[in-house]
Length: 129
Image (cartoon, rainbow, N blue to C red; front, side):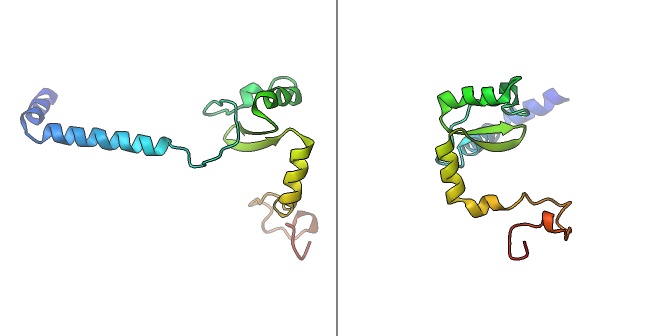
């Protein structure tokens, strides 16, 4: 039955142009989806799809991060699982980042558990705090 359908499709004059059209759009989609969104990404060691760079952290993570910073510089992007993390390995770069973006780092991460909380220690940075 499948052979009959395939032979019927091959005999029609629209089969080959349709196949070329579909393959063209598949390649076009792959090409556009593989281009990086960011034009200037931070240097990063290669990572694995699910665990990211967790396999590169050894028994002593601080030593592993120091070793990774040698070829990649003081700023590098690591993926701990599916969470991207910008690792700063020099005091000068950390001072510059914290001075330039102090309001960004003054808040705590938003969490659905603590959104309704009215306790002072769990409030975000603002007028009430």
